[in-house]
Each structure stands twice: as C-alpha cells, then as structure tokens.
Image (cartoon, rainbow, N blue to C red):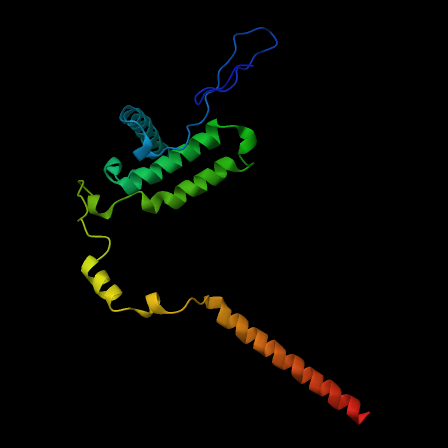
Length: 186
C-alpha cells in the first residue's frame, strides 16, 4: 500500500483495471504566521478564489468587506470557514456528520456579522492603532496593591458551598430535634 502524503489520499483502484484515482485531502489547519512565505502566497490565492465563489454563491457582497485580506480578523475568520468548508465538502464523508453541509452553512451565516468592517464601507480605512492596555494606568493600579492582587485565594463557589452545608446541617439538626420531640410525646 502506498504511503499517503499531506496532499494525497491512498490510491483507489477499480476492479476493471482503470487508472487509479487520487483524491486530495482537505487542507490541513492553516496558521498564517507559521507558513513559509511562498506557501502563504499560494494559500492566499486559493482563499481569494474561494471567497469570490462564496460571495457570488451566497450573494453576500455587502456583508463581506471588499478589503477583507487587509484585516487580520476577517482573514482568520474566512480562513477558518474555508478550511471547514473543504473538510465538509471534500473531506472524508465518514468524518462529517449527516448534517455536515447544513451545519457548515449555519456556521457561515453565524460568521457573517464578523466578516465586514464598519470603517471600510466604500474604501479601505485602517482602524486607529490603540494600545491594548493603558500601561500607565495599569502600573498605577498594580502599584496601589489592589484587592485583586492581595486577597487570599478563594473560589467564588466556595462561599455558596459553605452556606449550603451550613443550611443542610441546620436542617438536619431541626429534623433531629422534631424527631426527638415527637418521641418524647409518645
């Protein structure tokens, strides 16, 4: 039996001696930052063709930013949708549920609100660069010794568990007292 590679499935042979058919595997998970540059170019060209097909097929021109490839967030969402689509429609049918195609379409429509950019309605506009954390405010907060950093460890559910145990104990004591009172009468 021939070994399979990342792009080829085992050869299918027919009983009539026809030439074997090679089936390509769905794409592996794509991690853009981990891809060699030439592979990124190839994969991006593949993704562009698919995105154009999706826009046309599902008539979602106004719901996917025309400059989607310039937005890392949208690029990642479309990549995930594409790889999921390839696995659903071109992958091993035994690994896809009976409703795989329907589920993929539902996921696609669930992603649509995330595939646009409010700042790019007519032309691409880079969003303003805002620091993720206000460094000075964080340093000030941390230097002031906030309760968050100084409080002893306590799981939020522990207080509830303690109250429930205390209530259960009180209930058990009350039952025992009622039972004892009932025995003394009789």
